Length: 440
Ligand SMILES: Cc1ncc(COP(=O)(O)O)c(C=O)c1O
Picture (cartoon, helix red, strand yellow):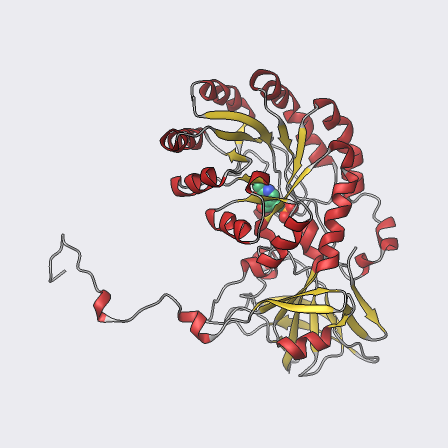
């Protein structure tokens, strides 16, 4: 459910007309609904309330400081995968004691920063990493809380690039190796086992894979609890959202027709009987679920190109702004900001980037559009701006947060100066490789 609606023929974000935002802040423009983010968070917490969950929002989905601040103000924790994300959370006023730190390639600098900040737990992905955390903890004279990420080898119906819980993926530790890691842990005086974690992938719409994964690792969780005094079981993120009918999914009635979907309520209902008897703190790491359908990308039609074989609607947003369609072939619903009656058009919606893959929709039937019209690309709140780049030397878009009738810029549009920040062409900074000498 979300707060993007037509009133008459005008698209509104909460109480603000989307067209006004585009006029005021320009396009392409990311627009987020604060009420939707908070509502998604509250619904998840309330569905899981008997389990007293710790929700650690996956910062990678949308790492804008204002989004983090909004969630932190509700008592939300954070799932981090880099030192940069920790930096953002601290800048936004997040509580490090509610942060988990996952990722297969933590550097010793990142481990040091997280340990000094006092995070809740590292999520350890390999035997070597365990030893690396032990070394840093020993150097700092601290005891580091760790959880083992178990790869439950469960497939889910999702895109191959976002499956993380199968044996062939780089994530986690195989269940057969866990016993060996338990032995190793006992030899490390500067570590203590705080929990077990799983995360099987992203955009998963059925409950079964989550249930299957939880079921498979419960025996390992019980050992962690009974032998090591572990206190939490982190069941990861991955709950899917509506992409095809994103606009319609703002209507509570729409959900009733989706009896199979893993809504927070169904997810909680199915997992609770498995989790409650463990008497552990349950951690969840949603990203997309909280912010995905809380954001749209507004873009303006620049041109149309009508060929006998195909029609193109050329817009000012590109794959550098929203890479999901190009990267995953993912579907994003595209609607006009001002609806008009009459003819429709079938064609590709493409951007300015010099790649044929710079395409938001192919052979899509759209309402009639003309140069100057505005379009809203839905489900852009997660893995949208956070995956944006400056490819083709395109400054990244602005981001705006709407709250009721208020709206404010939460990231200014980048300038050309931003494109070259940190680069230099001065002779003063030239260094000579000592091995090769002056002629090298
Ligand atoms: C460890 C971990 N937790 C949580 C998430 C969030 O996933 P989602 O946005 O699908 O909820 C991810 C996403 O890649 C992840 O890698």
